[in-house]
Image (cartoon, rainbow, N blue to C red; front, side, top):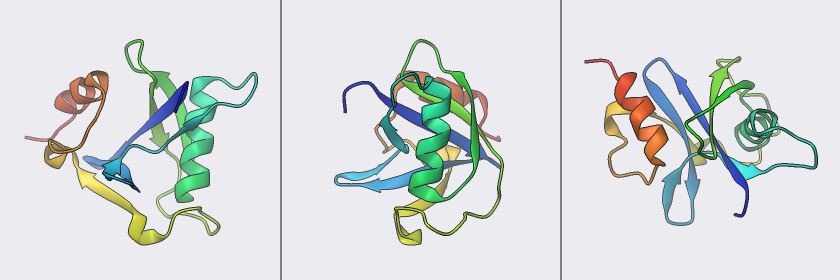
Length: 112
C-alpha cells in the first residue's frame, strides 16, 4: 500500500496484530485527504479491530504510528473476525515482518 500507515498498539506487554495474506502484521491503511498519520492509525485500528486507540506519535520518520489503547474490549462492527486479531507478547514478535523503528520501540518496552 502506497502511503500506508501502520498502527503500533502496545498494551500490557503485547502488540496488536491482524491476519494478513502471508501471516500476521500491524493494522495498516491509507490516509484520507487532510488526515494526519496519527488520525489514520487510530481510524484503521478501530475499523479493522473495533478497538478504540489514539494515534500519539510517529516512530522515527517511518510510516508506523504509536497508538495508545483507549478501550480494553472491541466494539461490534470490526471488519476483521475475532480470530483474525491477536495480541502477541512483545518478546514473541521475532518472526513477524515489522519496520526497524517498531523493532527498536518494542525492544525498549519488552518486560524482562
